[in-house]
Length: 200
Ligand code: ATP
Ligand code: MG
Image 1 (tube, rainbow, N blue to C red):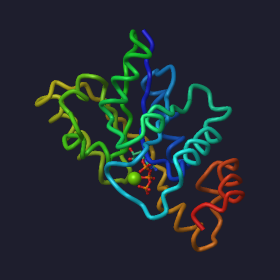
Image 2: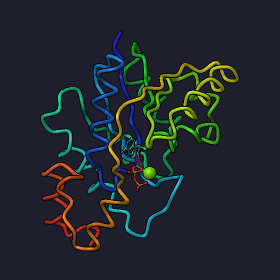
Image 3: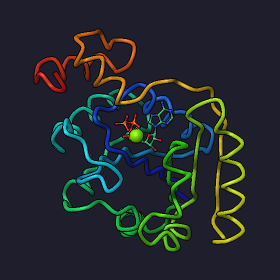
Image 4: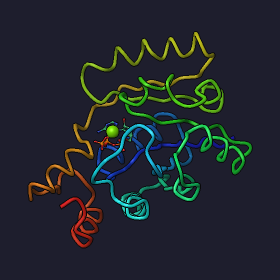
């Protein structure tokens, strides 16, 4: 049976923390493919400087180029409107009927899962996977995963990877300040940002 990772996010822009997390989960859980899935309108946050969906998608494409087993899906961008993860999981089940789905999240997102639209369904559509984003969050993740298993019958996978202290916010802040971002994003993404003068 195929194992597919679904890694949603704003990816505004995609950075090395995202790519590293996707690769590590792929290896740790033996996933065939991990799809980065850029959101259309992010339900959890609204940014003044949110790049267009096509631009965020293009940067994800550049970031996964040459990375084995990483891909990008435009399901949420094509669907438009608010992006609900439950719809995305249902769509992936339609496209890959005999596959197991793994929903990949960083700690900040994982700890809000119960507030997501139709979480009860999400819990049965995918294995819920999480990794910490800072030193403190690992214990919270294990505790929260216990709760999701007990209350919802969810399957969970918490993996304690070494962290890359990178966020898209940091990338945007650096760009606005005219500082280099070479250590934060893949070269091709940096080039794209410069050419399009994004976040400046
Ligand atoms: P922003 O600063 O704009 O919120 P972000 O870096 O948090 O951007 P998102 O697109 O919001 O990126 O996040 C997508 C997913 O990636 C979320 O599940 C988030 O927790 C996770 N994530 C982002 N950066 C990291 C990182 N450095 N390590 C682990 N997980 C991360
Ligand atoms: Mg975020």
